[in-house]
Length: 89
Image 1 (spheres, rainbow, N blue to C red):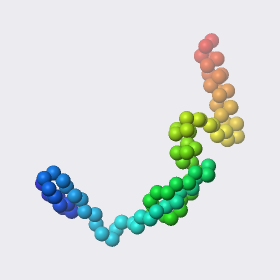
Image 2 (tube, rainbow, N blue to C red):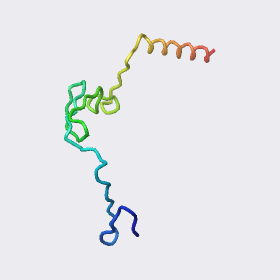
Image 3 (cartoon, rainbow, N blue to C red):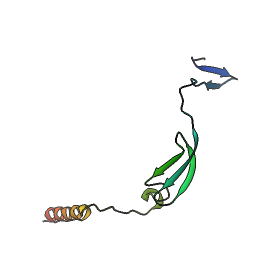
Image 4 (cartoon, rainbow, N blue to C red):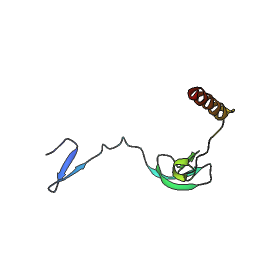
């Protein structure tokens, strides 16, 4: 079993070769979150600034925080309460 751009090595090991000259250069990147968390990974950029990371994201922390923009959350809660009251009568 052989495909273009691959080489059969051993009995069941298929190795894929990448085209040269078309892939970006990956460097060690320093990632900084607005919560203050910093970590290192690899990317095509040297520095990355993010607004949310696994250190402060509600899914990973188990804490949910609602960002209220102009009272939208309260307005939604009032609408839901009216809907429940209308459905109960």
